[in-house]
Length: 144
Image (tube, helix red, strand yellow):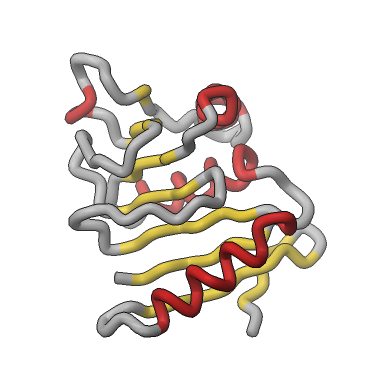
C-alpha cells in the first residue's frame, strides 16, 4: 500500500479532492472519499461538480442504490461499496480499510501531530510506501 500525506496549508481538502479524483480516474481507478463531517462531504460533492472548469467528476453519496456504479463515492466509513482501491481521508483522520492500494491523508496544520503519529505507525509496517506532500504556493512539492 502507498500512503500519501497531504499537508494542507493553502487550500481546504474540498479543493484538493477534485485534483486527486481526476488523477485517480485517469489512472483507471475508483476513489472512496471518507469524512466524519457530513458538511465537509457536502462541500466536497459541490467541488467535484464545479471546481475543475473543464470537467465535472461524477460521484455519489454512500447508501444509495447505485453505490457500486459510482466512480467516486463519498462516505462516512472506509467501506468501498464502489470497489475503489484508492481512498481519500478528507477530514485528516486515519482509518484502516480493506483492499486499498493507495490512501491519501489530507490534513490541516492543526492535525500535524496526528499525521506524524500516523507516519511513524505506518513506517513500522512492512509493504507500506509513504510520501509526504506540502503546498508551496499553488503547487504541490514532495517534502521531507
